[in-house]
Length: 252
Image (cartoon, rainbow, N blue to C red):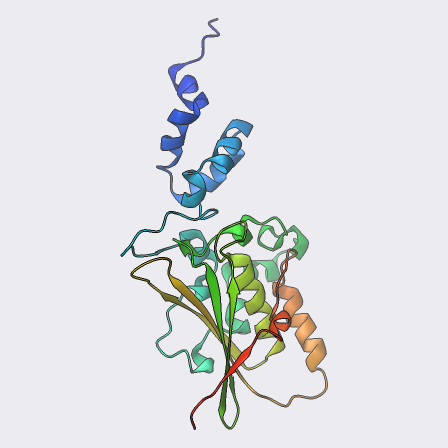
């Protein structure tokens, strides 16, 4: 029997030939291709062309380029990528209850698999390292809107240009949102994507809540709510932003 490698085997063994083939795959298939072999995994994780295609590294920024949303994140975290006409109406925005209806969370509630075995909530889950769009925003702008008898606005900005990913990644946005909607009961959130004629796009995370006076079991409710959605790799959370907010004067 001949042991001479076939033409296909030879092609797949050469990085310069395999790379353009892999780049033709949809993002989901490209991500899964890492499991084929160590050779595939090494090429995919080190390729300067494939990593931006998987939203793990920034793509070159070009003038007048329309940003591309990460399709894998949009599929599994739809409420983060929904455009809302009036973000000031907190009751119309995604909330804790809507996050609980995400398919992978809904299945977790009816499954016998523990939350620590759920791929999405693992510390090493790949979605946590993914950029939300290409080219990626280099800063995460935050807008906090508190409503009672009058409206209060505060802003903050978190820089990510010097981070390992080179832009805003999903882990930061998810962790802040989950911690926010579990702390503030009557709350909602929205992401505002703005294109830029030059440079990178702007990304604003708007957090809106209605001030409430709730006594009794509120703290226990917070912990229970957060425990369902919290990722093992949770990093920066809403409470960590306390000293970063800058109050904005709002006209009556």
